[in-house]
Image (cartoon, rainbow, N blue to C red):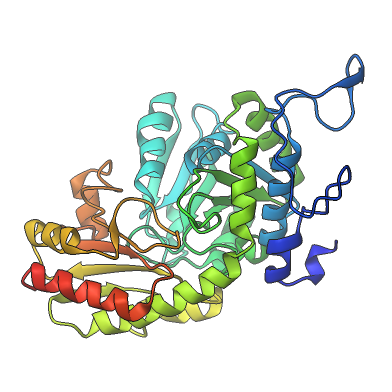
Length: 387
């Protein structure tokens, strides 16, 4: 199958998933084997041990690579496991430049895991790509960023930043979790590595935790493959099967969720009790022009600065009935959370304040429910919080 000639809707269903050659099963089998027979010592057929490789995982990795337009895919037991495996390619004394607005778990890895090991990170607002130049040092070995960012939904110009990284010979890793390959494909814009928490949109049903790395760079792939096997943070065959099953509806889900998110964002923008709506699809968003150029859709995440104190924000969230108050995002069900208290609590308050993660910020992950029901739910929460 020549993936470069097929659309995403087709790849999501077929890439890496030819009918099972043994039984001609149309759906990818779940191969629950920890080890595989060898014809003679040291000469396995295709697989030898499931930490090193598994047929179900291979199908998922091939599908993920095809969706992102890459040549090498690696699946992990979580997004954090994927991130940490990539970071293990660094050594003490190395330096990372990261976008200033990242998932709290990623910040924790940089600040609490890597920093004590001698790998330091400089956090920079990369909305102006030239700021990267002042942050790069002779020890910089990786540039990391999310776009859209979590939770402020800032956008960074992947193509412009990738070009600067290539000038310095530094790989650019883009966490594409918020967008998914349906919305943007960073490798095609010059990034060296794409990172996903497959827990989110890729799987899309809030029933699997997983992660992925995708690249077309053979040298990076060789190192990541070594550390994937050596560290062993790999997903089970069943989890791989579940993610593959979720991927089949990814394009359909993303289009519907983005449509509903834009409707809600536009209504929220003009509502009393709202200070700012952060959503790339709005003309008022500072990166709206970049969104139209870089993204196929504006996404299904909406962050809202309520004109509220922390107690009012809590009442708002607790009053929701269709939006579920929970961490995570990207599932078929709509979720709402308070970043300062929940997903980004590991980030120091002064850093949160500088980024804009205040007491009134609420993050919404818009699901597949009827958009009018979602709006009525938000209106009820506004009333409960007296906003």
